Image (cartoon, rainbow, N blue to C red; front, side, top):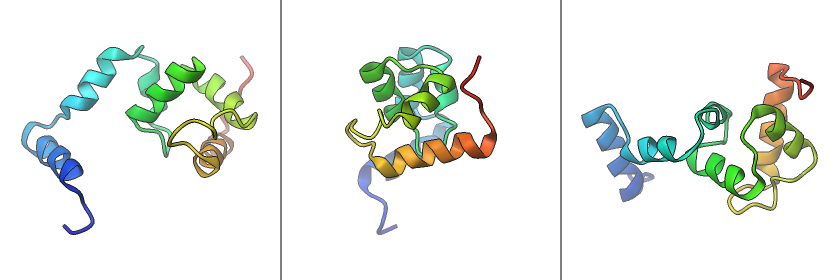
Length: 100
């Protein structure tokens, strides 16, 4: 497909052939288990979750929502205002609360 680069095409092929993505498996092993839940949030894949965890020490949905609401995510590389807004909207739509 013309709009898919070599790197993404190789990952798609790997998933189709093995039912796994080795890069994702390595990232899952290198992060605490609760971080995997954050990858279910639209706009957040393993690399972005890892970046947020490493740069802001955020590993829970509660803390991620609070950081998005305070505008702390938008200055991270690869995460701008648009992604931060999508994260806030996700939490608003799902009714996830920041209170314990």
